[in-house]
Structure formats: structure tokens, C-alpha cells
Length: 286
Image (cartoon, rainbow, N blue to C red):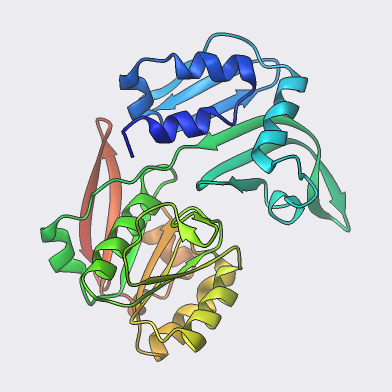
């Protein structure tokens, strides 16, 4: 896949006029783009490593509606289960965040009455796990953490690929469909030849199924939440290596979230420095 193709596929989700503006952007910006954002009454914005840049044109409520139809393929009802969490993963692994007026039932958000903002995240395949990193992480349980938007999912995907192509049997619980992005059962991202993917199922439930049915050597999960912590003990007790990502800015925050650090051999902290991602390895028991 050429460098700009992911951007062009994300732009295809936009309303017609905005799509044209996005597609005519310089290639240098397309390659570096991380998100496309639409805000009703404010306009469209391109998120780059250094910040947001406004695109030509405005965004009306009807154009946002057009974008929602494209993203959900006109089946807003079918997307309801995902939308109650504020996002929907479009075909190809493009996670779209929604904001607007929510519908509440029994005190819980069940969907959107109207949409005021959209954020289309542009996933990339980046070969970021070199031989040196691989030798430090192979056959170890790894926790990857950073602030949002620093590339945890990208790093996890590439680590899964390298372990899988190295002969490890990997089970991937891909709840949001962002890591492998199955389409017709075929991963749209390279996650290696020895990887089994369970998509669209809550992580804890998916991990339980994968452990029970696929006999993995490695269990991988993206964006671990508090409700998923119990499955880590189950995985460790089964003798598998764990690969997980967590939103956290520091070890203190990891501990505050209740992450059982004793289950991991090494931590990978991802930081941004001058638009570049830096990977720092730390001992879990430090």
C-alpha cells in the first residue's frame, strides 16, 4: 500500500466537497496526517504531529449527516452497540469518534440524537519493531503504555506481526477492529501468518474464548480497561505471554489503574519528541 493510500481511504468517508479538498492536499501532509476532524459550524481540520490545521470550506449539519451515512454504510441502527461508547470502526480499521447530543436510557448513553463532531483516526502500518527491540521483547509479557495518540496500537500491531512471522502462535482480541481490521475475514493490516483474530467482542470475553479454543502462545489486547483486568490473571495462569496496551502517562498512573505489574516482564513507554516516537524499555518491577 502506497504511503498516501490510508489517507485517501479516510478522506473517502468525508462529505463530497470536503473530500475533494482533502484529496488535493500536498502528499507530505497526507503522509503525516493522524486524524481528520469535522465540527459543525466550525469546519474541517487535519491533525498533524505538531497540531491541527484547518482545511478550506465549512461543515454543515447536513454534511455531517452525509459523513455518518458513509461511515456506518447507512445503517446507523446496526452501529448502535458501538455508538453508545462514542465511536464506530469503519471498514479498513478507521475508528471514528462521535460527539453531539446523546440519547440516554436508564442513565446510560445508548446513542446519538444528533452529531456535532467527528474524528476519523488514520491508522498506519509502521515497521517500528526492529531486531533489537524484538530480541528484548520476544518470549516476554509486555505492557505498552503512553498518552493517547502516541502510537500504542501501531506498535502492538507490528510486534504481533514480528512474533507471528517468527513462528509464535498469537491470539489477538481486537474488540474495536483497529489492529487487524478484518474485512470478509481477511486482515487488512499485516498481523503475521500465525495470528488468529477475534474481532468485535469485548476483550475479556474474547480473550476467554481465544484461550479456551485456540491454544495461543501469546495473547494480545489493545487499550485495556478496568473491566478487562481479570482476564490477565487467567492468561498468565494459562502460561501464555501477554501483550497489552494501556492509556497511561506514567507508572504511577498504571498502578492507580490497578494494573497487575507482576504479570509483566517489561514495559514499553512511548513518548513523542519533536514529532518522532521514542520507545523506552523499563523493567516492570522497577
